[in-house]
Amino acid sequence: MKFETDYIEKLAKIIKDNDLTEISLEDGEQAITVRKDVIVSPVAAPVAAAPIAAAPVASAPAVETQQEAPKEEKKTGTPITSPMVGTFYTAPSPDSAPFVAVGSTVKQGDVVCIIEAMKMMNEIKSEIAGKVVEICVEDGQPVEYGQVLMYVE
Image 1: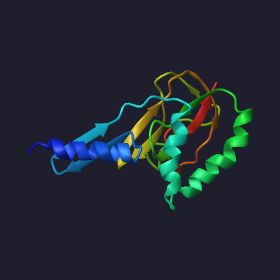
Image 2 (image 1 turned 30 degrees about the vertical axis):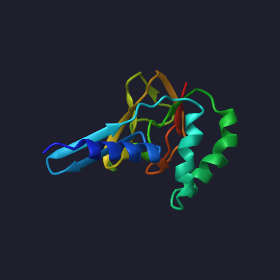
Image 3 (image 1 turned 90 degrees about the horizontal axis):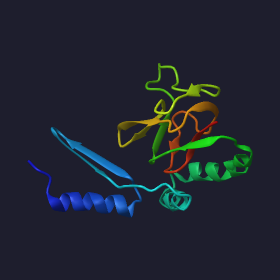
Image 4 (image 1 turned 90 degrees about the vertical axis):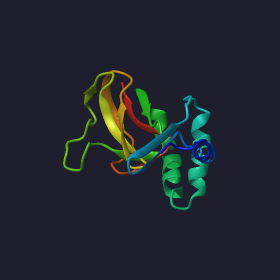
């Protein structure tokens, strides 16, 4: 059975209306993933924060992000940001060692964390080589699109 065009258009509308970057659904042997191309820019991050701040459950992380803003003045290095909304994990499983820790050296393409979005585990890879100088998110914490996960210098 094929997915109908109306169904795919409804999924695209959900992505647009909720400012999501991706939606994946599975039903038995059928699966569909709809992604929106995202251009990372300083203007995009505040737009993504608005729907989450409106939800009572997610308002606490938004407040924490605003409280951390003064700390960012003394940050050094290049930020690695979240490409999606989801849950941040430092390791592939609870029993495993973290991918990186403060002081770890990473190469371009190394996996630095996982973000779970809609029950899919997405490996986040470093776009630069260097040393991890700060990890800004705690294991299991929800993250927003564009949120700084860690700094590498």
